[in-house]
Amino acid sequence: MAPSVPGIDFKPQLAAVFRRYSRRVAARSRRGSTVRIDQVRSRPGAYAMYFHGRTRLVDSFRRYPETFAFGGNRAIVLDADEPVPVAALRRCISAALTYRLPGGRR
Image (cartoon, rainbow, N blue to C red; front, top):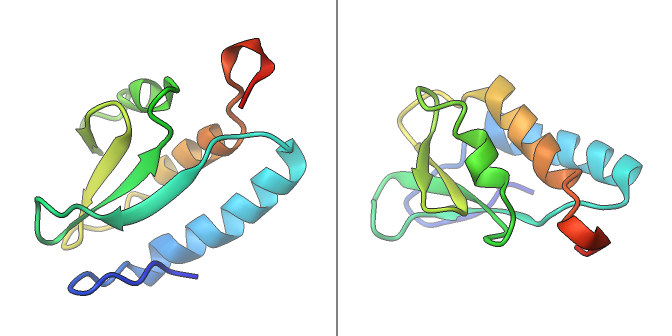
């Protein structure tokens, strides 16, 4: 289900990619990290995909500096008025849902 946040229309395209891809990858991997989508309260019209802060996921996503803005070490920040970078987000979601913490812990 697409997130529901007053004032932000989460693009159906983003919601569809996240829903389809997350189920498929998570079912196969049986591991991974939590991914959450929510508005950025300090930036009206922006939303973010949040990842577990103790992983190195967001650091690995910095290879897309022209595609994403980042919120510290735990979020990719997107503008609601810009097109959704589907291919890059698909790779990021896949990386998060198959991520394994060092030492075998989640």
